[in-house]
Image (cartoon, rainbow, N blue to C red):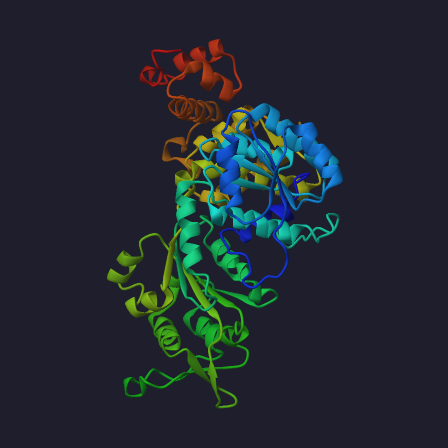
Length: 483
């Protein structure tokens, strides 16, 4: 990111991990640039709990001088004073591009977080942060510093954003799955990021670097083909008299291919009962018989699977075996839909925007605040997949470097009919009015009805906002008495 997406990804994928046990390397020196509008002593005290030496800069010139004479692993900039702090991030990144810059943000201000990433921040610390958050950015700094900034890794393209309360709960659940053989069951709506969680868990364990991550889609093939893909052959019919016997697997099976790594099963509910029964036995015994050598092999992989948001109902309906769900669900992670992750939406949109610009080779673009506010207000029934499609279509259809509200409206109305049943069959004019009404209403709620603040967020004049409130029939009750 002039912003470096690879650096940001590494730090996020290391999030909430403790520093390596027994590490002999000295604690990373950290430079802290405070904000006038926040108690610097309180922030510095929390930073000091990491055990890393903290140096305090009086202001930006002082920080630049210290960076020019001493070596630091990263710089932490408090973004509470938004305008001056963002300028400081840009200046620090311009003069010292190889040093990671971390911004301290208020999670309730996602637009500031998005601006920080545009300015060059390589990671974010939500205030009030704790020791785990500090450990995350320090781990990210250790990953970034030895890397040549010109040698970008193109394989690291997706990342988790964990700044909303619902995603912080996901991060807590992911910590419970730290032991590498722990089975994980990930529930959620399609497009909510279930496979990204599985891959992040796989890559977060440093022992799993370059280890296999095998994905099997249980809905892609017929029953016999799925069984052959998983076990290497359809196998013999299950015999209750041999219930204690180990399952047979062949050399070319997904189960053998996943040894030493992770096996991730998508659309598990579409797996036939016979396959589910074989999987349950395999996970119960944690061993199998090699079909070609007749040897007993211990299962050495992390099993993970994804299901819909209503796992218990699927068990009751007979689509999912309870014993299989229990064996896969040593740790259960419920992925929230995008509509419950409003704080993450601007960051996700900025991430997809950067990827789309790189893919199309059109040069960097950014969203206006009004456009980001609209993206944050839409329901996104298709979750991240739908958001990415709208952002990509917007980039393809916009020549300007700043993507405005009208640009997003044009493509959201055409490309995301699933965003709400009310938009079905509407003309472009009607769809636009519907989106604008929802966007303005959401912004007024977020700004507690203060028209001046809402107009600033939307990037329009106060008089124009009043006019749109009248034209679009936005409920007057959303306006506070203090305008």
